[in-house]
Image (cartoon, rainbow, N blue to C red):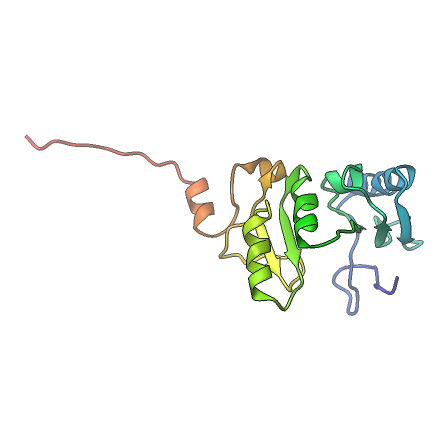
Length: 174
């Protein structure tokens, strides 16, 4: 509720606009879908600002079931779904039941559980005690399952391999 929404290069702004009109409409459609599916709207739920820009309020849904569209689809907007779990096993099972696997994160002080989560979760990027946004340019970035079509990793050595067409030539001497 307290995030400052506005032009991304202004001092103090924490969240910029949707990339274009189409994404704005997609974000607002998902918010409507979440409400129709029975998720509890805790914050946000509409447009932000009165200047006519592509701003969406940061939106938080609770009581989200893993089968709901807002849980199963990649929104790529300021909409977060809280899916409650009984324990680590239940959380991993619920996360792995989602058809996309771009990134996942866990907050813990238990290194053993962090590695257990990282090894069992079906996501291309796993972050421990960090936000799931952002990336390191030298590290591969891409998802599992239906994220990124499971075909490429866009950064690091993997990017060089992806954009390289290898040809092998054998030449005898004689």
